[in-house]
Image 1 (cartoon, helix red, strand yellow):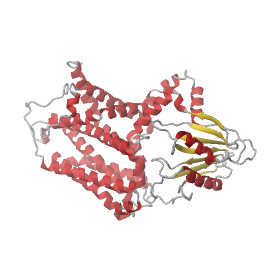
Image 2: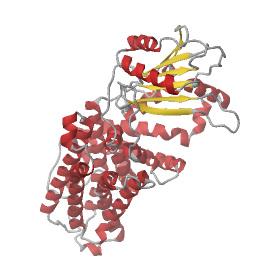
Image 3: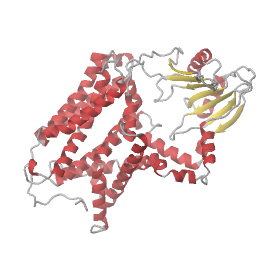
Image 4: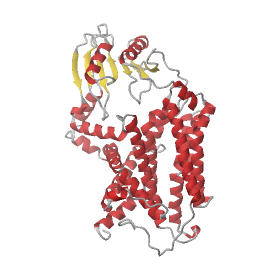
Length: 526
């Protein structure tokens, strides 16, 4: 132990945060963008029409008409209704019987206009969209997924330790929420770090603890199996029951019941817009089943009502939430991903995620400012200069890389092989250049330069969008495509914010202090 208990916690807080601070910053930024992954998807696919929200009856009728034409002889029909944010357009799919050896299963899927039932244009550009950005925060993109899961689990544990130890070392946690002393050098960065941390602490604790659940089965698979007495067959059976309903084909033809009537009955029980999807098993067979799935709410799973597909008789309800472990895990993961959140709460998630990124960034900057000596920069230790350069190249370089990702979506040739992957390459290449930039400039000048580059990069996104597509801001507002318009406006706002930061950095003078001067300290911070 180093000194007192709180001093030891201070040491732990500092180093638990510093060791992985740049990776944590990357996880916070890309994970925060994930709260609008569907909206980013839409912007990066300007060929797609605006999202639709269509009542149950016309959308279901359109889907069934299409499936009756395209899914003849299929074992399964699936209809995902466009009544949720993450389903901007109706999707259908069908799957044929198990093929004989050497043959391929007959299956297909389409995205439909929910009013007309006509397939939407398939000339959508190849793009990673918002889904790729979101997945980066836990797959790290270029790394093997299993290795990435294990590594992210360790990093998340460090984050959790940093949060808990941060709470322990702050005696005046509520006072910190209202304390900010500008133009005080390192003390200002500490105040900002405290302010961002305390103001978003409940969110940071929730997002970190629930994030650990994603990796718990990777690190501790025996816990899951042990809950079932190490009976792996029972585990497989349990999971199989939740994932699927096994029905044998009768081999006798029978007319499919009124599917809309069953879905309407379920909606009447659950409420308007609560039917997430409708699945038909063995359509046209005497053993047909209709399964209506409810929107999942806060969790990641919802209940299902199963009906006889010929008589329309209600058979059973399957609700995974009745199993306590699944209900708890589902609720925590649902909170982590914010899948249930409406527009206002989603923006609150987004802002809280940005506060988390700011918390990590200000903590990293404070670490260097606290250790700055009154020496020429080139005489400072290599370790100090490396941390300072990584701070700059990551805190501003990553947003610039993300702007490059959006630029690439509009500027790369549409027929380029591996176009979606090249969008990602553009992000990381740009970030790498930003990491090297401090080698060519003084650090203070580099901070200002990169802030201006970030401002220009984001402010130019709507302009590039207007130059390369018809989905520019004015047209989006005129056609009522609010998602496309909101993306452009948000990019402009970020451009202005980075411009304000660059202006502020331009006014900042290099301040140095004697090595022996008294420095602002957090309890226990070395």
